[in-house]
Image 1 (cartoon, rainbow, N blue to C red):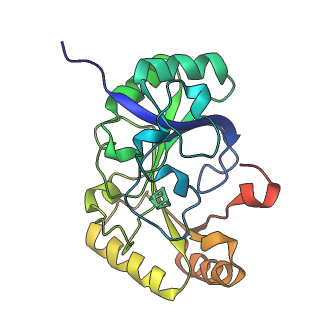
Image 2 (spheres, protein in one colour; image 1 turned 30 degrees about the horizontal axis):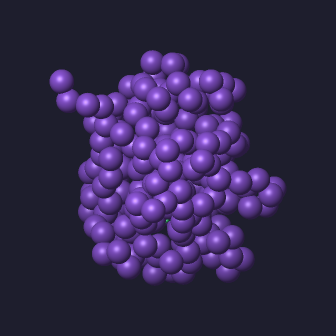
Amino acid sequence: MSSPIRYPVNDCYTCVQGEGVQTGVAMVLLRLHGCAVGCPWCDTKETWLMDPSHEVTTLDAALGANPRYTYMTAADMAAYIIANHPGPKWVLVTGGEPAQYDLAPLVAALHEVDFRVAIETSGTEKGHLNANFDWVCVSPKLNMPGGKTVHLETLTQADEIKHVVGRQADIDNLDELLAAAQPPAATQICLQPVSTSAKATELCLETVMARGWRLSVQTHKYIGAK
Ligand code: SF4
């Protein structure tokens, strides 16, 4: 019998979802380590590099905003979360880029202990597509320094497409992507101003009102939560 997948875990804490359609919902945020996308405005750059010198042997030693990570099985993560974060009904799997890993065993283990499971992914990896997530948010990262491609099937299987916008060209790029992917009409499209910029917020507001989309603001940055 092959040994179970072990995932690199960077952080785990209870919070309130600050962005997108599920804003305000209490969640256990489970942050997997590693990302090769390279967004210049990334809030979690400490998760990018898989540097073996930052591997630690327990989750307690990895917790917090730092480059440390520890490897855990899906069963161990589910047991840890149910023991330490029993309040929320949802677990949000994020990163880093979590979909670079096969996430089916992780979602199955979290379902076993009655959590609903959401993911936030850049659309550049496919490890979530057969994982039976209850909510999939794709935040497509286009033309980033890492040179990764957004896979169109990640958009057609998304409940939510949340696009970070700094200028009109970002909306034009999203339009091109949507025209190519043709996601279902039920998919909710959110525009999120980059780094809470006032100029980007104005552009997002105008566009969501014109298109019947949704505005996503990073509410955690306004209320001082992480
Ligand atoms: S995909 Fe996410 S974790 Fe990776 S660089 Fe971009 S914002 Fe950061």
